[in-house]
Length: 81
Image (cartoon, rainbow, N blue to C red; front, side, top):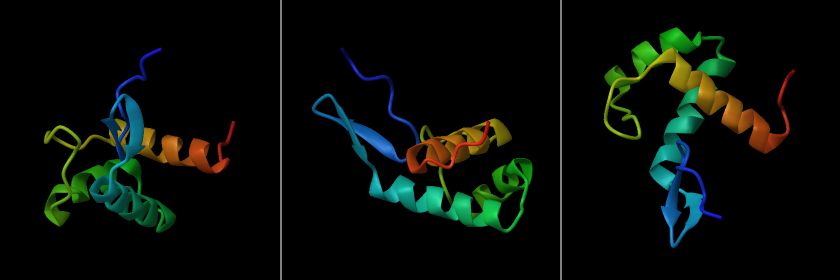
């Protein structure tokens, strides 16, 4: 079975998902901003001014920020239903 596309903070190496250090630093910034109670929309607006790239070099969207936060919550067992 082939893995799906890597999420933000990961890349494929020899068919396996492995951490992407540069992107993990960006996810840490997103988590910090979220802890400061910034909305996903506001975080997405701030990312370009901080020089933080998207995975494919496009525009940041609130939906992307929320997906990254959900991915982190799932990995750490902090998911909320």
